[in-house]
Image (cartoon, rainbow, N blue to C red):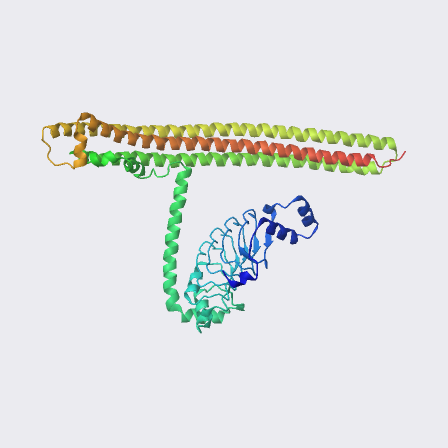
Length: 522
C-alpha cells in the first residue's frame, strides 16, 4: 500500500457515504423531502463520489438504475463491485491507482469510459463494451501500439484519448492509430480530418488488410454461431430441441455402462446397424411434426390478438363517437345556461345536463359490458382452439414416443436372445471369438446376463420417458401461460376502462356542481 495512505485515511464506499452523496446532489425541495423520508437508491440515476479518498468500491448494488457514476480523483486500486450497474452509460474512474482493466463485463450499455491518469499497462477485458463511443485512457503506462489494435472491436468508438502514454512517443503513433481505427472522429482532443485518415490508411494498408480478413472470418463464425443459437431457440419454443438427429438415441447410451460390454457379443453389431437409424427416423418425424404444430399454435395466437385488436378498435371508435356527440350537444346547453334570463330556465337546463351525464355514464358502461362480453367469447374460442392444438401435438408426441419404446423393446428382446445364446455357447466353449474379461464376467450365470441386459433396457426407457415428459410438461405450461395471459390482459383492460369512465363522469359531475354554485338570474 502506498505511503500516501499514511497521510490520507483510505475509505471504502459505505451506505453512509452514498446516502450523504445523494443528499448533497439533491439540494432542491425534492432532495430535502428525500432526506426526511428516506431515499430509494433505485430511483437514483446519477451518483458523484469524487474526491472522497475511496480505496475500495462497494455498496453500489442498490443503484440498479444508475446511468452516470463519477469515481474520479480517489485512490481506487481495483475495478470491482460494479456488476449490478447494468444500465450505466457513463463511468469516470480517472485519477486513481488502477493497474488492471477488469470488472466491467456486465456494463454492456456503457458509452463513455474514462480511465485517465491511472497505472494501466494493457488494454484488455473490455470485450462486452460494444456500445463504447468515448474512451479516455491517457496518462497511463501503455507502451505498445498493439493496444490500439485491441480497440478495433469497438465499432462505435468515435473519440479516443491516449495522450501521455509512452506509446505516444512513437513517431508513428498518430498515423498508426488512425489507420487501425478508421472510424475515429477525435484523437487526443483533435479532429481526425479526411486527409490524415486517407494517408494513414494508405501507409498501413499492409497491416490493416490482414486484420480485416481475420475480423471478417471471426464475424462470419460469430454470425454462424448466432444463427445456430437462434435456430436452437426456435426449436426450444416448439419443444422439440435436439430431436432432429441422434441426440436422444446417444443420450440413452451415455450412462449405460452395460451397453458397451454387450456390444462385444456376436450378432450385436448387426443389431446396431438398423436400430439407431430407425430410432432417429422416428425422432426426426417428431421434430418435423413439432415444428409444424408450433407454427399452427403461433398462427392461432396471432389471429386471436388481431381479432382482439379489431374488437377494441371498434369499441374505442364507438366510445369516442358517443363522447363527441355528448360534448357537442351539451356545449350548446352550457352556452344556454350561461345566457338564460331566468332562474327556472337555468334550473331546468342544469337538470337536463345532469340527466344527460347519467345517460352518458349508462351508455358508456353498457358499451363496455358489450365489449367485455364480446372479448370473453373471443377468449373462450381462443382457449378451445389452443386446447385442441396442444392436445393434437401431445397425441402425436405420445404416439411417436410409443414408437421409440416399441423399437427399444424390440431391440431389447433381440439383445436378450443374443445374450442367452452367447451364454449357452460360452458354457459349451463354442464361442467363435474371445471376449474381454469384463464382458465374460456377465456370463457367470443366466441371472447375471439377464440383469445386465434389463438394466441397459431400463436406462433407455427412462431416457425416452423423461424426454416425453419434458415435452408434455412444456406444452401444458405454454397452454396455461398463453391463455392466462389473454384472460389477465382482459381483466386489466376492463378494470382500466371502467376506471376511465368513472373518472370522466366524475369530472363532468364536478363541472356541473361548479355551475350550480354560480349566481343565476332570478
